[in-house]
Image (tube, rainbow, N blue to C red; front, side):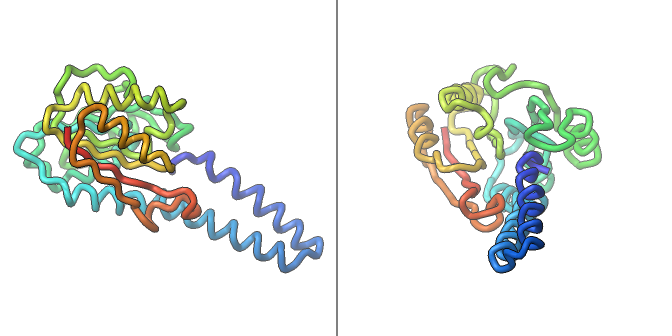
Length: 227
């Protein structure tokens, strides 16, 4: 599950609500418990179901050229990589990098992800590497398509995130496609930096209900661009 620490809020809050309910604050407590339970269930829905629907919709709109080289920057369990299974014939190589942090995703390790990849039809085209987006071991202009899902918001402060975007642009081929799927309200900053990096056809989309992390106040956005 993504950012398992995010759920730690809901348990104690529900317990406090139940204590208040037992103490006699019926209407307020019952409402509070119900709202928190709904928030928790929606968070789980987005983590277990919703984000995959968003990824699938994104990939369905990507048309790969023959022998495309793809980078998943911050691949985690390989969820985004696996969405390309139906387009395997067009893929030359797909590489996933991660720092394998369990803080950001439960049971996150290169070994666990390798097992998942090995059981897919991408096994002979996929590689995993331990690397940070800020320090990627790739040549300039190497990838036709770069995707990054629910990763960049973890790079703080934003100046470091800007350096990550600069590094992504460095390894992307001219005319290559970029897809950023992330959470937060800093889309204007992303757009500004991408324009500075001479990306074109920049589009922003709110991922909608499937991207609500507990509440619509924590939403998922998708940015696409061409270098």
